[in-house]
Every structure is written in C-alpha cells, then in structure tokens.
Image 1 (cartoon, rainbow, N blue to C red):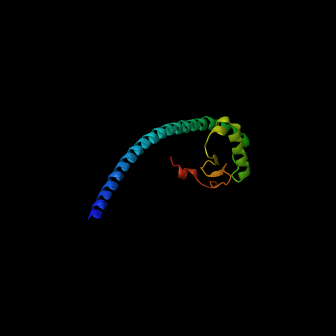
Image 2: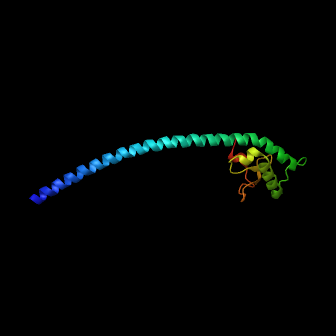
Image 3: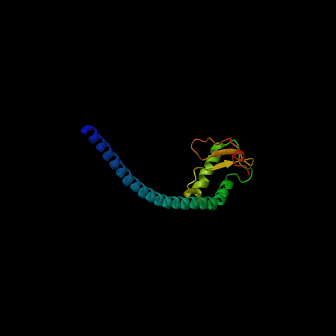
Length: 138
C-alpha cells in the first residue's frame, strides 16, 4: 500500500514539476519570439531599402544602357541570328553603365520588337527564343 501511495505522490510531483518547467519555458519562448520579431522587422526594413535602391539603379541605368546597345546596331537593327554579338552588347551595356553594374538584378535580356528574347546575359541562356509578352502581359 505504501508503494502505491509513494508512486502516486511521485506521479503528482513529476506532473507538478513538468508544469512548472513548461510554464518557465513558454515564458522564455515568448521573450524569444518578441526578440525575433523585433530583429525581423529591422531585417525587412533593410531588405526594402535594398530593393528600392536596386529599382532606382535599374530605372536610372536602362536608358543609358539602351544608348550603349544602340551603338552596336546603328542602322539595321538587332541581327536576330547573332547571339554572340547580342551577348557582347549586353555585357558592354551592363559594364559600361555604373547603375547597371551596381544593380543587383539577376539578368538582362535583349529582345526583338515582338518580345522574343534574342539573348540574355546568363551563362546558360534558357530564355533565348522565349516570348516575354506572354510571361508579362500588359
């Protein structure tokens, strides 16, 4: 009988200890949650600032980049069958314009008037032949 009583007391003691531990840990979690939320807020603000800078660099740089591209094809327009020249033009435009060089954009692409990608500046050009107007309708 004493053994049953001591097992019951031990079970109650374990239960009470577990509840105390859970309440202490949960209060620590809520403190960590608040701290994480504060840190995340700062990170989001920083990311928004970087995104705005990037958009401004691209907006400022694209007209200048277009001027560089126009020098490659002053009269006849872009030759649609010369991917090497298109890549060279894209590289010169990006490298020759400070805002485009600093922009964190992942790629630039050269298209014809119908929106068909002639060449992107990606090492493996998976965009060539794709139509941008389908992906980005007005």
